[in-house]
Amino acid sequence: MDPSSLPAYPSLETVEKLINIEKRGNCVPVYVELPADLVTPCMAYLRIAKDSKYSFLLESVIGGESVARYSFIGAGQISNNTFRWLMWTKDNSLDPFKVIKTGPNQDVTGDPMVALQKELALYQYVQLPEVPTFTGGAIGYVSYDCVRYFEPRTATDLRDTLQIPEATFMLVDTLLIYDHMFQTVKVVSHVFAPKDAGQVNLAFVYKTAVAKARRLAKILMLSTSTPEVLQPPITLGAQSVSNVGKEGYEGFVTKLKEHIIAGDIIQAVPSQRLARPTALHPFNAYRRLRQVNPSPYMFFLDCGDLQIVGASPETLCKVEKNVVYNHAIAGTTKRGKTPEEDEKLGAELLASEKDRAEHIMLVDLARNDVNRVCQPATVKVDHLMRVEKFSHVIHLTSQVSGKLREDKTRFDAFRSIFPVGTVSGAPKIKAIEIISSLEQERRGVYAGAVGRFDFAGDAMDTCIAIRTMVFKDGVAYLQAGGGIVYDSVEEDEYVETLNKLKANVRALEDAECTLLPFYAQALTELVNNSVLV
Image (cartoon, rainbow, N blue to C red; front, side, top):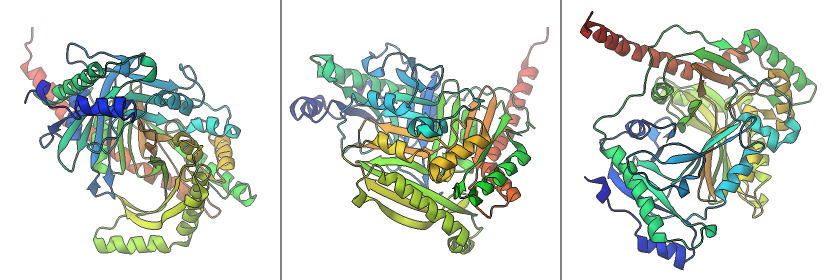
């Protein structure tokens, strides 16, 4: 199959009709389609991201058992110019991404939603029934510390141990959409005709977009093999070091219980961070994590100077056709060894007074967050305390939704919900202030958000950055916390954070142990085959 001859959809005539005649918008996705029965999402990622500086892979497993319909894959280089103005290159190299980084020592400072909203406001997206999902936009993360811009009362000076941007977004207009249902890949680009571009030759813009899609399809199809990531030699036995230690974390719990008794808060969620040196390539860690802990939000983001690997179970803020969704998870027990044991453990969790009380409190907080930006009559609890099975645990989950008010946007919804109560506490603002006074350190990606903001102005999907690792300068950073209430036991709470970190720690250790023999064998063969002078 010659990628240069792949048919493109929709036709130029259809695009001209949508933009020039019907005035539906100025941004239309165009795509070519490939069979994917012999390609996995990881293979596709490795093929197109081989020479990239920035890239991503977004996947999902629902209920710990069913693969979601779509995976999203993209890669590109860095450019100071937005991709929409770029011509296709003569070789098979990737188009640049425009990357927005915010925070101290970055080009953009302050509220990251301001810069993102300004960038995406240029697009009036036209959705096609043939592609009823995400086709492009901004993909990245927002650190927990950005709450200082959404709720200025929480702003305070904290140590910045990780030295990473407060937010990073890759602006993507050409990507792969892997359809697990039909075993196909749609390679999508976009026809964009901005109002300030003068008289736009849509035929030329259409040809450019199709060429970009076909070129990416060529990289995917004509790769004779799937490249491996460059993996340095691995040394086993690295130890994780906590930023607070057992005594420090238990001190957090004691202090928070004093605040609860004083009536300052009802609950708060302190955390500890582990730093673990490793030579493991972050993508090899992701490959193992997706096996160990399949989750509703699985992601690998290569942000240039850092990589983010995660398997989060929890939606932070999702918007579909201007309906806002927030998914609250509180209450956890282990999975059973049999379906019958699963049912028994789930029933015990549902009957737990402590778990039910904590869950209801967080649902009330979620309702308040959603209600601040939505039409009050539309705010509702879609389901309450559902027993939901994940790969290794059973959770109590609830979903709150509401219709955005006409004077609010998806960015307002994100600000209102961020960060969720399950990683901060209640009342939220006071809990955040107290947590900051105890931890004295920026959290970075942990407890922030990872996800996408679509070209479509009424859509986005972000998860809470928990069960997430940040790789930077040869160190993997893992972080976890727990909800502290009046009757919390200090040692139990400390152990709970370690239990939450187990899946990620196991993924690192398993990947290192699995890869070590291969590299040892390769080194032996190299020595045996060498010529001694």
